[in-house]
Image (tube, rainbow, N blue to C red; front, side, top):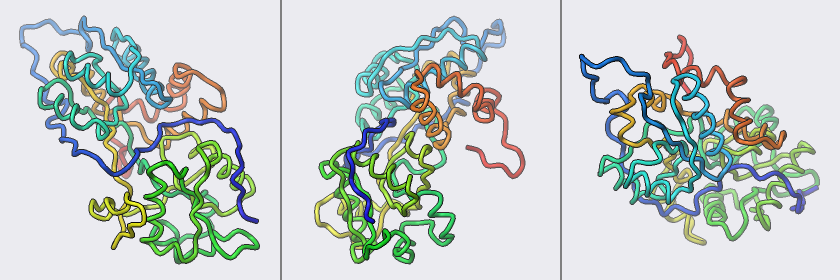
Length: 353
């Protein structure tokens, strides 16, 4: 039975994917937290934050709000900082950081979408990236349920799909399906062309739901019946954790093929992964000189994507505020945040997040 594109209302948690491949190069942040100016030998030791108030931008989407509350709570508890959360949205926050160095921190800034302003802020020594906001996975990919991966050990990458196409054929049908995004999203064109480039059009129909709610509803309904599902999605997002979705390796990014993929009916000559987004913990330059311990904290404070997906799922399930999610993370995520505070090296054999 084929999956029906039902209009099912589900919790919408996460930040929407980029609208296409037209991105401006983001300058690399030179230097790091370790380059802070040395303290004067005759000065009296100061608490990590001194007398400075640290302002943190609390953006309007869930993951950014959660991160702002997590960092505010940890800075108050572990560094005795005076911290104030300020409401923000990406363009205004970055423009303010570039001109006034306030707010002092933007924990989830998608700078590849505002590359010109970001590059200007770095060139003016107003702000720089302390670290990547997220680690441990691609922000956009094709996903399958974990039970599909467990039963098909050779399926790990997009290039493997045609060797396993029969896995994705619903009972009683002859063709498989790739669930894409709504037709009026730029990713719909990219997914169609990517599928054609991989030869999937021989065996797969590309399904474009009416809207985000229909998309989530169809995926949720299919997985509740343990049907084979191949779907486009993005993270961080509650649905990834709630449905136990696993991303496929989409391969390296190729600018030429990616440019073709963004044009309707342009079949690329080779493959390419989705265009990478640069998402950083943006920090005002004065933090590196005035509060180097705090700058060092942010240099270590990358959040694993699977952990953020878990937090978003917990928030949706419990209808919790960002502040409540932060408190939950302090209890359940100590193995993550303790290294941010201590700067501990991973144990032998362990991989840093």
